[in-house]
Amino acid sequence: MKSEIVVETRNLSMHFGGVKAVDRVNFNLRENELRCLIGPNGAGKSTFFKCLTGQLSPTSGDVVIRDFNGTGRLPHQIARLGVGIKTQVPNVFDGLSVSENIWLAARRWHGAARARSLTSQTVERLKLGDIRTDPVGQLAHGQRQWVELGMVVAAEPWLVLLDEPAAGMTHDEIERTVEIIREINQQATMIVVEHDMQFIRMISSKVTVFHEGRILIEDSMDVVTADPRVREVYLGNSAS
Image 1 (spheres, rainbow, N blue to C red):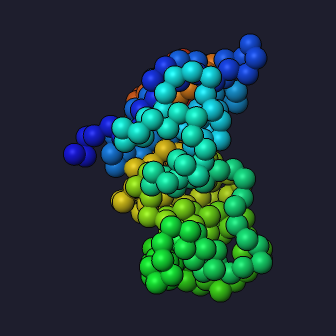
Image 2 (cartoon, rainbow, N blue to C red):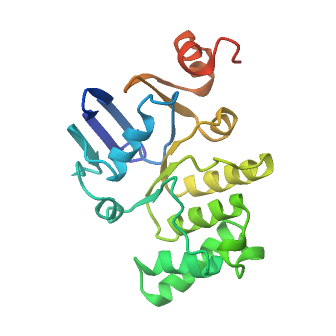
């Protein structure tokens, strides 16, 4: 069922001493949905993301991924559930080519023949053919980000979690990244943490706004940007 809830958090909390970075968050995501998480610095969205991906073990509450309780699991254990994760920290081999990086990512989960096939498919899907033999260390920032996206999708995940995929990109690179994310969303459910509001407007039909460790509002981008609470805490009164 396309309406099936595939990711859910139940009273999820993450405390650092007396600081409640995430405070009893109840969140759900349906199959084939693309959801963006936004909020000001310190709002809790990145900490929430890290609890989903296994980078942090929550203080209390549960993370449920397709009926599997992933609370406190390590990132590689979450990945084994069919989850592709792209963090802010680069995870590429600079001395290897684009195709070699993608092949290694595919080979981690598949046999050699299937990995070769997936590498070719991924290079074609993400339109990386012109740079497929280039060493990743010589690529522009945006191209490196695309290679990382390719490494994620080469594993054939059904759920893709991306942390600031458009950070540091030029306008043209952002437009290309929008195309890539839309393409990935054809086959995978997605959660994207991002700051760039224009980028979010281009990719997401529903947005979750975090503030002080809790969900402030969840709605369409138009409704969110018009909400006076959001304008006050995140966008500023002059936002449109």
